[in-house]
Image 1: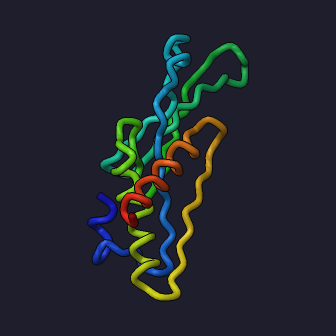
Image 2 (image 1 turned 180 degrees about the vertical axis):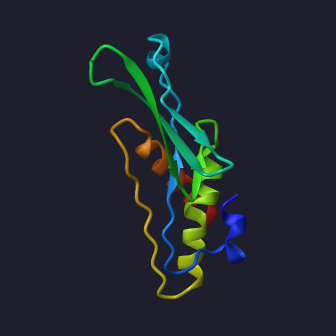
Length: 131
């Protein structure tokens, strides 16, 4: 758990952290037999992309595996509350406990990657905590 590694559960004032949340394959993707090219190693905070490429001769294919580190990586099975508790909640605690503190939560990703789904869940959990 990322939050357990932060003193008092509060992020340092100038910290930048990268979180990754993988979305599951959509039903229509599974029906078409599409290959899931993203794997998450939550224990190591790494995301691996399996990119199918063509050799220069355009006759043979190969898969290039690229691994990307992050502060925390969430697999597609993780619940919204868990994502909130380990990403936005420490930011909120920092802002509410330290006058003048500023926090930014930025969503970035391809269309259909789950940004709105995740942000809506974060907002709902935030509302539950405050009200």
